[in-house]
Image (cartoon, rainbow, N blue to C red; front, top):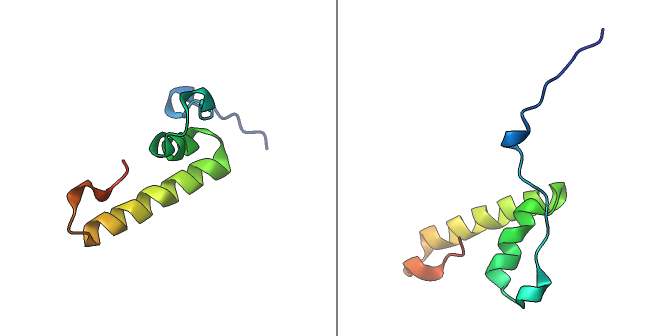
Length: 66
């Protein structure tokens, strides 16, 4: 059986890496992992979840990296 699948490419994140010409901006570097590739995007998702868990237990609301 042959199945034709039509993908809506508007739902995908454009793949690109961090621009190291910006210097060492660690929050932006971690955010850029979400668009670097499959493994990095999963790492980015995990980092966001850990940050949410840390911030939910924290007394300081500004502790999170968005």
